[in-house]
Image (cartoon, rainbow, N blue to C red):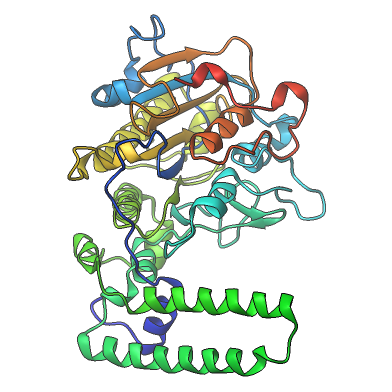
Length: 430
């Protein structure tokens, strides 16, 4: 990990030109500037919910790790998810979780984009990556399936997360890893390519009409933005905050004994990517919905999926508590990035922690969600526990997330567009 090949550097620079965002928040801003979706598998065992009132609630033992962030949370239950057929519960749950879409027969995947990609298309301009997808042993075998895919670029277009933190680091921070001589050579090669393309665009411009010339001019502007990012070395110190693991890629992606280590590294990288301005939208996917992962010291020799279906309540709760602890770790990492005006990265970032079903037996109600961060003066009224008796579709929470991020024209998602499935949930707002 200390030296990359020329091909890797060129590929990485093309994928990850580095340009930092302005990290200070305007005092008048009332919206979060970043979004982070987090998935954990197979719901939460009964008894997870807080007790008490909306603001004077008491956290359950399952949620007790979230106590330091109590005033920056909305803990919500009562959502109806997208599972229609219990036999296909895991596939339908994963497919609909962030898209609101059913499985499309011909493709076997979702028929709509996921909410993060809809938001990224609006808020991702000016960043090196429109979105970043971090996985923790998220694939079943070597292929995406509808039980493991949760992010969709569009209908039938699942996005595979990267499960090896080293590979993700190489992709995101590639230019920071080069030695000075290699980096100088890379920039010279990039400049020659940019100059060649710029010259070709100028040469053909005169052969086209007004509308086409306008498109060419837009392409020229886009090219200039890419060139500026590719040659800007600012912010490279971010890369120094990550220490590459010494595992093989195959082990990082498949070995249960490494699951906790890979989980922490991916969260660290996701936090760095948001803090350093590489992206405004990211997701972290902890394994998949039919996972055979055995978390050391948590679920013995039986995989998560098997425990959540067939084992004792105590074993199920132990898995739930582990994932809640990882959410607390993530929130702590975000809270630990403090800006000059006193705000934190957690204040700037809207975190949505969700799952594909209510409990491990494929029920679509009540689906639990936790919303965190985004600022006390933001869209969501924080510090609350809400048990939604009206059984709203979970997509209404996602519509609320979109509107909180400034994408206010989104009123419904995927296949859930009926009168009761559309619109933001006003009770979640300030």
